[in-house]
Image (cartoon, rainbow, N blue to C red; front, side):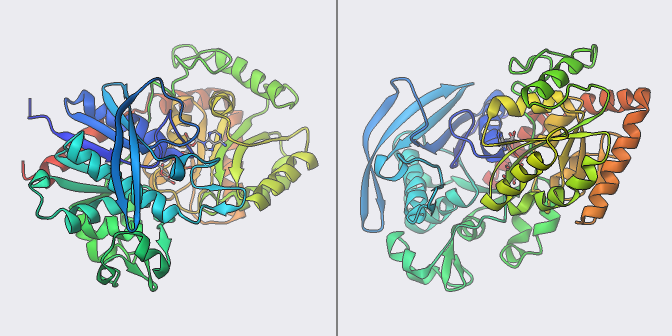
Length: 467
Ligand code: ADP
Ligand code: GLC
């Protein structure tokens, strides 16, 4: 076997500990997949209020310097699926109601909170887990490569270590005004346009882009879409797209204990039970004959939910019902609640974050709708394929890379008309029951497991290490 490497991931979320979206799913599954390949893998995360751990303290007061601030971090460790999850416990920064924001908005010290995460990761690398590869994810970990190269360039501890930076979403750049710089242990000269400077302030995402040895994003199509972005273009030679995987230990109808009844490609009959149970749970008429469209989504600009609001009245006139689970933008939450009250026998909406219900929607719906404006990868469409719940998606980013006309329904234009026409095609196809079953079986047979992606990361790590 090729020699194992030591890989230290740094991120702001990982399932099952802390999750707001797909980033957490990735950090819950990619590190174990790398461990299975024989690597030694650890993940650094903030210890948020919601993270409940058994007695797990391995380090009492790790000094974390950020600008004028000194924090003494406790480090807690949980070993899960062969991976060391290391939690940075700084209550002044992380023991709060939310992960990034509360009801009053983004936390005003987010730059300090995530600069501290990066500094803690470097301190962990020095004292607790010395990596060959630092693998930082999204803007929240963007300062890791910068601190490493700018502050520790001459430190023999880190000779030979390399930094990989993965962009899960270019829509969130960690931009802060120039007034944040004194808080960050940064030479202000680095905040120029070829450094992490953006519009007179700084971007943590840009720090990750500029100072890393290699950049990845989460699908080949999204890599092509973002390489022309002015922030990324000068560094596009370092960029590759590696498609995310789906964690089938969590998301498989054969084994999913959260759904009403288990089913598989060999015996689909229980999917009907799941559908009836979902309709009952959400208070819709239990009519198994007409199709159910599911939505599970952050209600954010990215996700194209305005289009759903626009087509809902059209939808309500057809033989179909819609179940939507989501939370986020307050105006969209109100609009979605409005749809459910206007069409109580056709549309059911749950606002909030419900892990269990998300599984029951995947299992109980016939179709899954993701009309994203842009989508770096998207995981729910992959889960839907596995549950035989055919995706209706806009052909963008990772949606275009994972859904084919044989396994789902794609549309190109970002418009209500294009969306309605794809839904129309799905409703038409649903009428031919034999053909629909064939499509379901084909969708369920697609394999997007993490093995292939983990191997691609393995190759990338070796390439940047010169191994
Ligand atoms: P993104 O990361 O952009 O939100 P993904 O499709 O990659 O999109 O991943 C979303 C993940 O978050 C999935 O695991 C999905 O089931 C979950 N999710 C999103 N919204 C909710 C919600 N309201 N309740 C439960 N799970 C949700
Ligand atoms: C981001 C993207 C989503 C992707 C996820 C995991 O949240 O919006 O498309 O699947 O990260 O990489």
